[in-house]
Structures are given as structure tokens and as C-alpha cells.
Amino acid sequence: MATDEKTRLDPAAVEALYASHVTELRAFLIGVLRDGQLAQDVVQITFAKLIEVGHTAREETLKGWLFQVALNEALVVKRRKAVHQKTLVRLGALFREDTAGRLTEAETAAEVRQALAKLSNEQRIVVQMRIYENKKFNVIASELGLPLGTVLTRMRTALQNLRRELQAD
Amino acid sequence: MSISNVNSTVPSPDDQDLDWQAFRYISGEMSADELAAFERLLGVDQSAREAVARSVELLGQMSTVPGSTVETVRPNRHPKIFAAVMTVAALIVVCLSFATFREAPTDEPGRTLIALWSEPRDPDLLNDEPDDESDDELAAVDGADADGLTVPGWLVAALESSSDDTSEEE
Image (cartoon, rainbow over all chains, first blue to last red; front, side, top):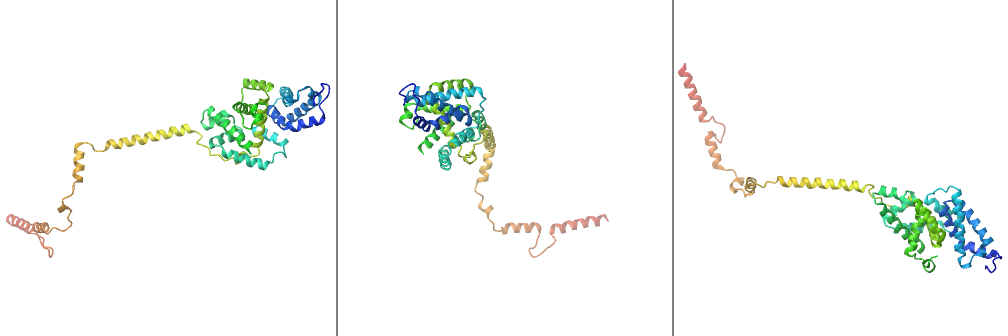
């Protein structure tokens, strides 16, 4: 792949890297930038740099190299532009919009419902309030009359359980 | 990428901690110091970057379900107030029960009265049959005739003496 420092990566290699990593890279950038369009811009910049100077990176670290370049670009953009916090559902939707076709929405929704149903009621309430009602943890703690630590523990356990269930599917 | 991610889909405790930090990062729940520290970590740790990506992907899945369709049973929103009200109610019940208990007769006259009341009644007193003898006595006192109304003897005597007195006066 990168046999000579002066030789650029061949288009097929770039295409393969794009196919392998673009979804995860884009998700990462949405997490950093909270903006779908900005994330897409940074993805393009990152792969343009891959074409230009990607041959300087070692093959086994190319994924890390991509994320590193993307993060640097994202932090520059973030400093230049005010990045507004989105609701978590909106953040998820930004990611989903670009991956339409890869996720079959109805099937995914059924799997998510199933995973949510397996949570304890206490965990489900916290998930509902934090993700779907966009309430901060301290507000949730106040409304439920619980210590903040209890709410955080419930959310953390719920997320672990949801990940396990949705990965298993 | 951490070893656990390469060899298994089950995240290690370190990955779970990174996943939690990543979730707090993308949900804007970190303090300024935590945020700066986590972004420094992102600069050097590929597993932290992947944790951010995983959190966004999870939210992507979650966003396919409208929040209004998630079934939850909300508890009382003010459990401390509810607990306080229930405690006060319980105390009132206990106090009332104690007061009632103290009012029960425990002194000797009270006990005697209860004992007397509880004793079996005299069978004669409980007998519903009419008492002929007592009826005769009543009839004798009243001068009553079983066949009809007659003027009692004492009334006749009283009237006679009264008429005697008036005639003497005349």
C-alpha cells in the first residue's frame, strides 16, 4: 500500500478505507461537533488528506490516523464556530439520516423496543427522561427525588444493557 | 483499539468506563475541566474515539423509537413528602389506639360491674311465663275485678269519709 513516501495511496485502497471506516468516523465527528453537516465536511477534508499524505502513515495505524486527522480538523472547526448542543435524539437522528438504507428502521425500532422492555422500570424511566425528554441528570434526580449518583448509576447500567442487547441482535 | 474490541464484542470494564465518559461527553454533561481532559484523551486514545462513535451509533438506534411509545411506570414524584405524610398518619393511628386502650376499665369497681353484668341471669327472672301470684296480689291491692271495672274499696272508703266530714260541717 504505502511502499514509497512519494507514492500516494491508490484509489482502490482509499475506497476500501472509506467503506470500512466512514460510518464510524462520521458517528465520532457528530459526537464531537453535534452537527451533521459539519461532520460531513470534516469527513471530506479527512479523506482528502488521506489521498494527499495517507501514504506516510503505517498501514496498521491508518484507522487511528484517520480519526486523529478528523479530530484535529473537528477541533479547529469547533473553535471557529459555535457548536450548539443538540438533543440526544436529534444527535442520533443526524447519524441515522446519513446511514439510511444501512439501518432498516422498522427492524431497528423493534429491536430497540425489545431492549428497552428488558430494562428495569427504574432504568427505563431514567433513559426516557434523559434521551427522549432531554432532561439533564440533575433535573431528573430532582424530579424523581433521588440522589444524583443513583440516577447516574441507573443510566450507566441501562446503557450497558442496551448496548449488550442491541449488539447481540 | 483495545484488545477486548479486537477479540470480543463484550466490552471490558475499561471500555465500559470509556463508553460512559463518551456518553456524558456527547450529552453535554461534563464540566469544563472534564471536557478538556476528555478531548485531550481523544487526541491520544483511539479506543476513546471509538467509544464516542459507539455512543452516537447507539443514539442513532434509540432515535428510531418515539419517546412517547416507551412504556414506563413513574413513581410518586415526591417520595419524601409521601413518606412523611404516611409516617404522620401512622403516628396518629398509633396514638388513637393507645388512647382507646387506656380508657378501658381497669379499676376494681369497673371490673365488678363487668363481672356482674356477665353473670348468668336468675332463671326465674328470665322466665317469660306470666306470674299468676303476683298478678293476684296486684289485683288485691287495686281491688280489681278480673271481669270488669269496679270502684276500688279504698276509693269508696275515702269518698265516704269525705262525705261524712262535709255533713258534720253542715
